Every structure is written in structure tokens, then in C-alpha cells.
Length: 145
Image (cartoon, rainbow, N blue to C red):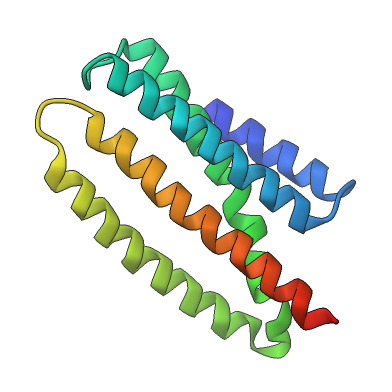
């Protein structure tokens, strides 16, 4: 899992030199939804207990997609903050850690002998995040004109 994450981080850095951040963030968000959907489908088809190799591969790919998305999304969110970017970064870090801990606690409480809650939460939280991303992209396009 760590090797995949490191590879995605390096590739992400290289991609940012060639393409703009907004399309890259969108691709990473969609990739997370695709891999999370596959994770959920495989988990549901196996009754909550998929083969460990398949599950770990999909889980790793979903996490790698998130590793590709998070730094780009945070930098885009902080872009308009200018001189306050340091303070804004602290607020974003605090809020994302708090919300992440709350969502993880909800998922943790649902786990009872299988990995179905992880598949459901990755897909549901990913869908919510992608919806927010698309909404902010639309709002920012309107604000520019």
C-alpha cells in the first residue's frame, strides 16, 4: 500500500507540471469514486467478506486516489487566501481531522465481522466529496464571469 501511495505522490507531482490542478483534482476524485464503487461491488458480491488480495488491491487503489486528490484540492481551496494561507491551512487541517475522525468513528461502530461498512463508507463519503467538488467547480466558473 505504501509503495502505491508513494508512486501516486510522485506521479501527481509530475502531472502538476504538465496539467492544471483543477482537471487533475477532478480526475483523482472520479478515480476515487470508480475504485470505491468497485470495492463496494466486490465486497457486496462476497457477502462482506471478499478475497483479501482483491480487497487489498482495491482498497489500496482507492486510498491512492485520495492521496492524489487531497493535496491538490487543499491547494486549490487555499489559493484565494493569499497572505492568510498559513492560517487557512491550519483551519483546513483541524476541520478535516475532526470531520475525518467523526466519519471514521461512525464507520468503526458499524464494523461487525465483515468489511461491508468500509466499502459503503468509502463510496458514500466519496460521493459526497465528489458532489461538493463538482458544486464548487460550477460555483467558481460562475464567479469568474
